[in-house]
Amino acid sequence: MNSRSYVITLSLFFLLFIITLGVTPLIGSSKISLARAFSDTISISNNVDANILFQVRLPRILLGALTGAALSVAGAIFQALLRNDLAAPFTLGVSSGAALGAVIAIALGLNFSLLGIPVISLFSFLGALGAILLVFSLVRTRHGEFPTGVLLLAGVTANFFFAAMVMFIHYLSDFSQSFRIIRWLMGGLDITDYKTVLSISPMVFLGIFILLFVSRDLNLISTGVHSASSRGVNVSRIQKIGFITASLITGTVVATCGPIGFVGLIVPHTVRLFVGPDLRILIPASMLFGASFLVACDTLARTILAPTEIPVGIITAMIGGPFFVWLLKRKRQA
Amino acid sequence: MIPELMKLENISFAYETSPVVENLSVSIQEQDFIGLIGPNGSGKSTLLKVMGGILESDSGSIQFKESPISKINKKLFAQSVSWIPQDHPMVFPFKVSEIVLMGRHPYLSPLSFESSEDFEISRRAMETTMTSQFADRYFNEISGGEKQRVMIASALAQNPEMMLLDEPTAALDLKYQVQILKILKDLNTTHKMTLVLAMHDLNLASKFCNRLILLDEGKIVRDGSPEQVLKKDILEQVYGVEIDLDSKDGNIRVHPAIRN
Image (cartoon, rainbow over all chains, first blue to last red; front, top):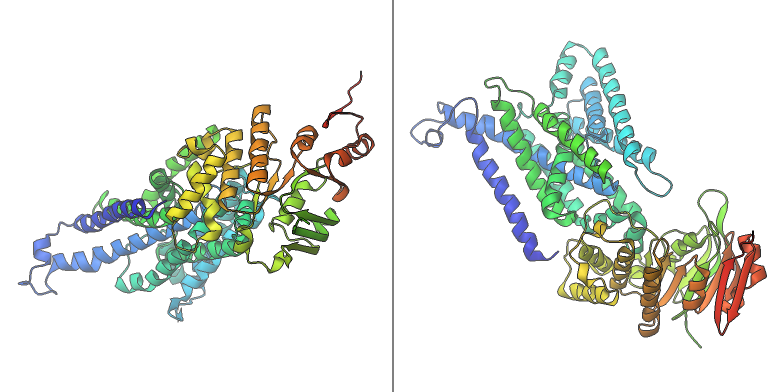
């Protein structure tokens, strides 16, 4: 890959992202006018249009963008590390592991921050990491491969197990905790503010940067661990960095938005069709496309049954389910 | 005297408990063209991985140019020694040219792209292996013999002094077997490349290699020229099958004796 085609391709994905960011705030159940929102004759407290735009829609869109970016990049990384293109935070049970972590934190009433990181995010990260390590150690064969059948089975098992744990905790919790857990489990970007967006962005961006830093090593690992090693890649170190960082960004966004399925599967696949499997470009392109994709899905979620809003996870699952079946079918034919 | 490139002393390796390579010592000289032969499970592949720094031996020492490979930086070692696996399952749709460029990894720093020099080195590697014509095709869409040549090109892009190949001719038809071995022979003579190949075909091995190492149960049974190693009684004992062996005017022909 040369740097010119790199810049051109990424510029196109960036353009798509900017267009999404520019258009989606204007779409919604109540019509708003940009002229009135930016008007300086109406005082800010009386300006309904400005309030809807800046206090309701924009933070929600930014959170959607961050979440889409994080889940998509994590998906691309899990696929490379496990050398299996059906791996994703959702199919591997990483999202439900993160959910279990978050639910434990909610049930224990842990509502404080540690070094600026909300404890619920830390628990969520540990849940995600635990899930991926479980799947990794269960599935890996003696020759370091991850066969599709076993991988999906382990993912399904992990999902069921974590879901059962979540239900168990939910059953034992009192009324107010129960409400918080249910609200959170439904997943969604609707209750948010700039503070939330600001608190999770450093984690997500730092994580994506770290992954970009080791992207060429990950490329080699995606072609085989032994040949990667013979090209000078410190395989076990890069695997650790990859799994921990991808779990970290998954845990961070899942702690905030609840488990949103299939984004990490659909986006890397779609982007790979356009830019190829080189992670040096697949990571930033998936980040931009994933951000645009989830924001678009969320716009659909809040308008399709307007004024009723449905959780965005329903939209991504309705697109993701058939997509997954199509992938599985194509893989079997290959 | 020919300088010594790699020296293995009392190397043992076990995946679990039973040793696959046991107390093995061997010295490899510059420009050697070594065929590692022996029955399935005799430790050929494992020995190659240990020599390539992919597996760490449980005991013993390996020196590369007189320094222990455990002390050599992984990327620096990859600039001198490359390893090519037997088969190449590829999940993701990388193009042939991308696979070859991956051989430049040990020369690149993080967050960087290949320079025009890297592209030039890869182009030459593809020329040497006659793979230039499918540079833009997907690796998964080319034939087995073509894949093997592409992997050799990728290993060549590492600019190594020594190449380790795990059964490079397995699963290839006769034409490709000879083609691959001719490319390797040419690298050996014109580029002074040191080569160690795991091989099953004893006839081809005797024709192309100047030195054969016969392994059995992780130990060296014989090490020497094809004439010294390919002996009827030794082969019959190691392979456990009756063997016909004729050598005429420097050509050794070995095949299992099949009598009805």
